[in-house]
Image (cartoon, protein in one colour):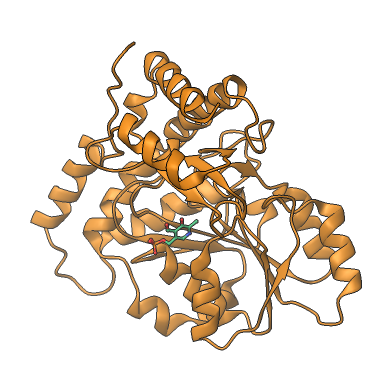
Length: 329
Ligand SMILES: Cc1ncc(COP(=O)(O)O)c(C=O)c1O
């Protein structure tokens, strides 16, 4: 048996240097620090949107979006981010849950739902990967939303830098937002962003954007981490792909994702056993389901996205596969 050598995702050395440099050269002029302006330009390049704003967390970006979108929101019945509902409640914004296939909204499901319901939602909020495990058909959902005059808001916390340009792509999302906290694809430990072509969305929340703005040090880190995002994302997707092909009965086996979820007859016990076996710097990469943010059924989630990409070696992945299959089958 090979012993696992796993490390939790950490800030790259280049980002540490960029952030240290920003901290030791504080901007003292008028207006916005150059690090903030530069990171906005970098976000615009990656999403393809005309406008971008930096905020202090992913939830802040969600609050900005919900505050500007008057009317009710559609959320997936599982596999989304639970913060959206909490923030909608704070802002007295009505929410409705749309049925999904274990988190995935198939276009015909959305079309059917929209023709059946008696209300007209203003926006559909999705994460690029349902439960971080299954790519949503974002372009097809966008086309339907567009035809029904509904905004598609894509939370790309798990998908920044997609080289296939299927997700986190501003040509088929009215709004893209993301957390750059930890452990995320843009892994700064703090911050977030929102981008759009619809200037009015940012204008309506101008005060919130000022109040919740990211600091220059965080933005220096975001600019640096954005450079690494495409490579980190592809490595994480490939690692999940390997496990999805090797471990039996994985949920959404055929879809791209950054974690791996499999049904469990006893999630509590299986999580405990796996946490004992898969040690990661005193942190955990095992999530127990049912959980709204993953899947609403008895299951175990292996959060490959939490691992530093240097840990995604053939040896480690093969041993994770052994540990999981021994524990669950
Ligand atoms: C998909 C998703 N969106 C938003 C957030 C919130 O981000 P933050 O912690 O930066 O507010 C999280 C946090 O884990 C998340 O997983």
